Figure 1: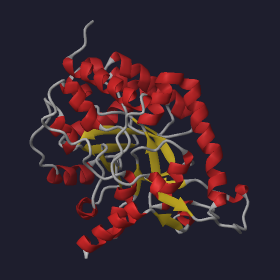
Figure 2 (figure 1 turned 90 degrees about the horizontal axis):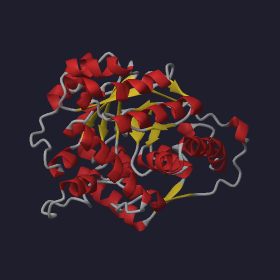
Figure 3 (figure 1 turned 135 degrees about the horizontal axis):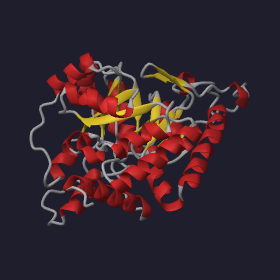
Amino acid sequence: MSESKQAHRKDEHLSLGVNVWRQNQRLQVGADFSDIRWLPNTFPEMSVADVNLSTTILNHHFDWPFYIEAMTGGSHLTGRINGQLAQVAKKTNLAMAVGSQSIALKESDAVASFKIARQNNPEGFLIANLGADHPIDNVRNAIDMIDANAIEMHVNVGQELVMAEGDREFYWLENLATIIAKSPVPVIIKEVGFGMSDQAFDIINQLGPAAVNVGGANGTNFAVIERRRNRQPDTFNIDQFGLSTVESLLSAQLVDNQVPLVATGGIQSANDIVTSLMLGASLTSSAGFMLATLMDRGETALIQQIEDWQRALPRLFTLLGAQNVASLQTAQRLYSPTLQNFINQRQSATH
């Protein structure tokens, strides 16, 4: 049975996104994790066994400070991948987010590609996913579809404007306020790879969601993906637009952000997780890197990669003399001239 245009689009996103990672063609936007150096803690006065990696956010106690970020769903192929990711999440005790469920609200054939995540991980922490324009009834349906523990409401102006068939109107704030007030599960406001400025955090703090996912640049770049899908001349090119994950986390600090932070965007090592937590994130997540690992090397290899991170994190915390996530945030660090320049410019603008 042939699939719809929207289902085909999901497969295109998957193929193009994986190829960008596979071919190491990701663009560098702004400062990244390498722009932060950790200072040695010569006398940590602790043991690896003292480390507590758990974090509490979204009304839940997570054993690990990272999870499998939203990637896919909506077609036969992407449904199989959601099933594999759910099995990986179960075996590694990680939370998992599904990709945008909007297609499943329109096409009943697409529902199974999301439900499989709950079927394969009955007791796991699952995060539903919809665009910020969806009404509360759709939010409830998306949550019920996978018996979700939380929901990401994604904000993606850049992606929509590059997409030939994308939205051209963005009136989201009133709707998001309603969803935050009425959702049966915690709401995360999530960027999809363009990052967030201090101005965005000011607005989000007024909305008061359960968390905000900064969705920084240097991971999967949907401006690049949508431009490749368009197969048209590059008359609208925003490939270098946005703030990196590092820059977004620092932007939150400039405005005394009070909403718990989730960091995603280019995370591909335990070291990246540590740096993100150091900069104020309560939780981190990885999408493109994990997806590329799964597609290229299989489920067992992805489990191995995650377990490697889980083994490395307590040692990295010990290296920095940090017994938990909160103490890691006081660890000393050095910023590159590029990153310090960003901080100085934004401090001047916010004061």
